[in-house]
Length: 400
Image 1 (cartoon, rainbow, N blue to C red):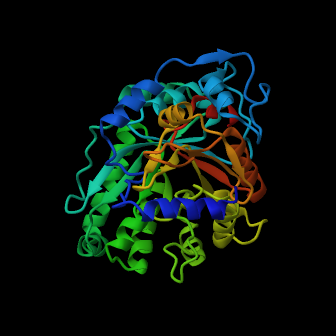
Image 2 (cartoon, rainbow, N blue to C red; image 1 turned 90 degrees about the horizontal axis):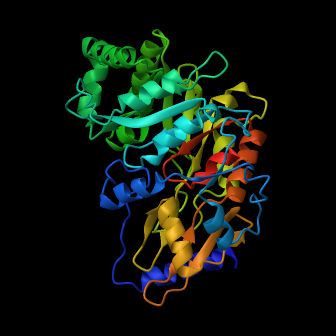
């Protein structure tokens, strides 16, 4: 089935429904309902262990079937310390509401260079208050204790800047005393907990609040430089290119910030949505996003890019649908006896849900689609940033 025909079919289904639902993004911090907690419990079940990895079991292939996935998804290789993806840095995000991510980061410690637990939110109007209730200090200690001279994983918690107004941003930027106090607060928190830096999710939030780019880049530069003076790294989460007249993050923004930022975590996922159904992250689009920031292949700054890699998928229905995690995908696959199809253009697998009461389509990563993206990362000389470890299938870890 051609992907264009598929998208047209979904749009027809949506158009005849009485309403459409706008789903929360799989990256949305507010998606902490009972379903998420149940999924986390389900995914923490102890997986089976095999002497062979997914390559030796010949599971990384285009013609994979639902039976293959349902039979093998929870089986892991016993060799958790072998890393297949070597060239670039590997960042794994972890969210408190998908607890399997904590376990996977510990178990596959040697496959990661960077891990970012999604712990902190700084609300507008409260710049000097960082709630720490989501911190898991026991897990943090176990990750740090696992570090050796040969291999260590840096812990850089993500900080979301939520509901700031442009006036609040400008106040902390122009008031040097407040800005220094803010940076000192971040440094103190990092030193107390032996963090290695932070992932800042600030760019989209402040632009949408009406903050001028000149102020935003200067503020980020000031924060990053202050952290670097204390041996702390800054990773900046940035939007992917959308081929708009005015892109949110441009090559010029990258060039201005790259001397100050250690890595850029590019959100190359959510290419489609319930309003525009289709693949999660077409390979050609990802390639274009990287080239838009650093056009030249031999530019060493390519290594600063962490290409977004989604471990979640989407289920599109007449009412809209929304993002799904691994356990939900397996349930859909088993319930509807999904027949996987491969789209050559996007290089993603999908299957059709043929239920009369709620038909639709499901896009979710497979080992083969993940491998095509890892190969792209090697080709483009970039690292990867996985959103997020707790959402994927157990055997996804084997491929890293």
